[in-house]
Length: 43
Image (cartoon, rainbow, N blue to C red):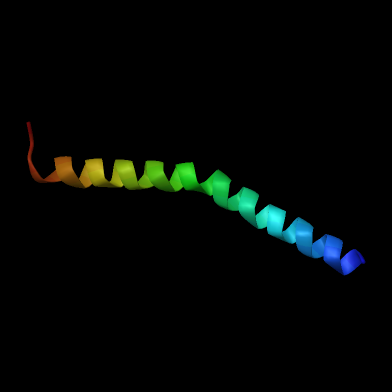
């Protein structure tokens, strides 16, 4: 019984962690791509 509840909580925690980290990953990719694109040419 307690093991089933722990498994459910673990799955929910993993899903929440994924949803929370996704925007930060997208921002990091966006800023990483922008900085690498502007690094080559000076305006």
